[in-house]
Length: 136
Image: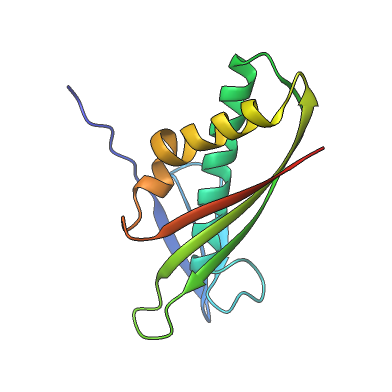
């Protein structure tokens, strides 16, 4: 079995601003001061949000749900002491679509969080991950 290896490059743009991405691919911008772009910790929340949202969209499509809305709010709680890592992440999923009900939405979210979301599963296992669901 072969392992997939991902590569990125990161270039300093001055101050605490950086641009990075896959070599030769589009760039994302980061600003550790969160002034001109999201910083690393916000980017981590965005990565987790986009990962789980992608999973949910795929699972709901397989359940024959025609999505009309999928948006997330994410709150990350950080430790006060160094390292100021996340100790909890809370998602609020806003989902609507034809053929959607609460059971289908919760099943898709649970599968993402518990099994599929590679970003969440790359984080420390003691981070509490919780969610709320808003239909419509």
